[in-house]
Length: 159
Image (cartoon, rainbow, N blue to C red; front, side):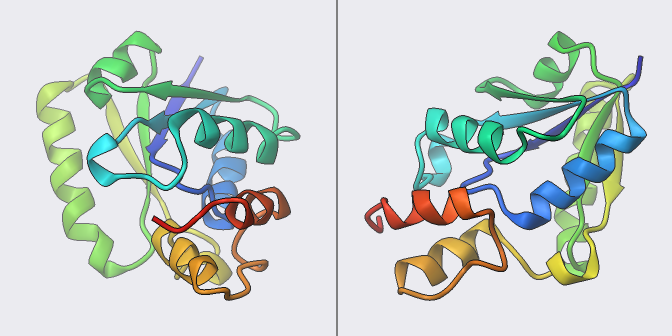
């Protein structure tokens, strides 16, 4: 059974994330959306809020499981018996960082492959950071995130 881990902070989960997850669910027997604690990034939503939002947004997607983690990604990947780390590439600017991560993960866990997916064209420019900034300034983010995320963002005070 081929299992993929799709790690991220998902602060918040966007339509770009959802697009990649839905497409990955067609390629793998199971996709684990691995929500990173990432306290160093000072996320707007708590870890539990991010897991809950992802569960609600992805409720209708088969073969997807949402799990939080706060350990080294390759160790988490091994714990889950996953074969692949799935990463998204939005633009050329993502490539250098993602290439470096993939190389380090390969060095730490040579048995785990990294696979890159590009988002659908209409999602290529969406990032959680931009969504949070637009929402904090009162802008409309309805084309970038699920309505449940808008509701959650509207209930959050900017940090």
